[in-house]
Length: 250
Image 1: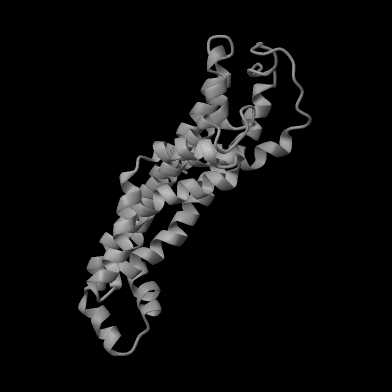
Image 2 (image 1 turned 135 degrees about the vertical axis):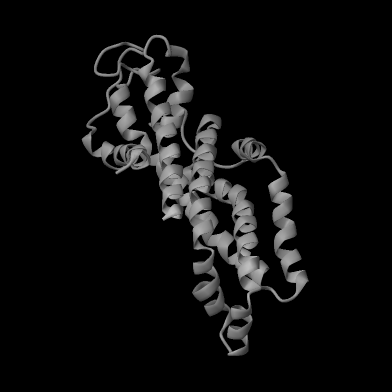
């Protein structure tokens, strides 16, 4: 396992397995250097919060990325393989409008009107990232869809679904894999931003992004409360990109 694999696996294991090793969460004095990593801004053990806080960040980022690809890839294939230009325009122009709106602005607006919860974060992140997915996949699929082999299969009576998922998708798979690493990182950034803004979780939730935000006041008293979750987020983000880049090169 290379460096990328280690950076990916360690935060992932903590996020998945960590909650199993946490018992009852007690509260004491805030920002005290007791225990292994000290206490956080409401007096909870930082190590326990680190073990508990990864599922929301990693899980929501992965789910949101999956939703964006489940929606974006079919739209991209429709736009790329359409034989009438107006179909491409109908698919792409509304997405360009969404793409023109800054993602952080969307999060700020949602923070004020939408109910708090992970479902809200998944929907917002998916909406923000779908236009990027569609543009990348469409660009890669346009060249493949114009190949003589595709036209020959059309003449032989192959269905559009079989052409799209049997030929075009495998041909653009390396591009999808490379983009997937970037898209997961983007989703992670947006999920963390949503946690900072209070969109997805409660202000005192066990969440790596929330820990970084809420414990800044005690950075010099209990630095681990900020540094450890921040390093885990950074490590997972870098590890994802290194692993997917390596997969593309093979």
